[in-house]
Length: 188
Image (cartoon, rainbow, N blue to C red):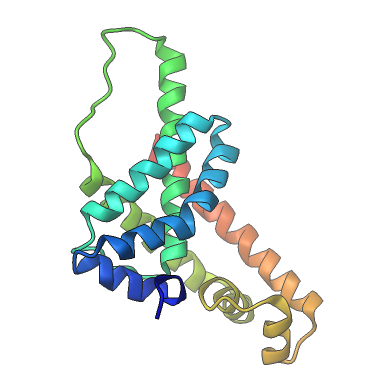
């Protein structure tokens, strides 16, 4: 079986056992998407490239201890969002304090701290999902965790696609609000 046909989990297992080919395939599979997301959020291609590079360097460094509680795709998407927030906060600090040469950023590898913060973010997301109304939670999980389309969810649950769309919209609005409050307090 070629690498392109393997699942993310199979590629992660390859990567964990030291095979760079698994890592390379994961990189090829996700780097463009992550770059587009980071560029759209930061408005700076160079900064976006650095964010994506940092994510993959961290992924490789932490390959042995990496334990995912959701899909790799979700993990990478949340990693981009977290690093974008951190980058924007750093830019905000820079603009508030000027480009003072005495103001130095800590360049120490803080991947452990980032992992702990990511885990905290994942826990908060799980808590927020658990607080959703039952039908809303079910639709969200089928969509985001199982990868079902709105049509598939409607067929599976015996409801209309409009109802699925409404449940998903409500779930996303609730989660977005809860995570924004969490991240706002987290950045400050």
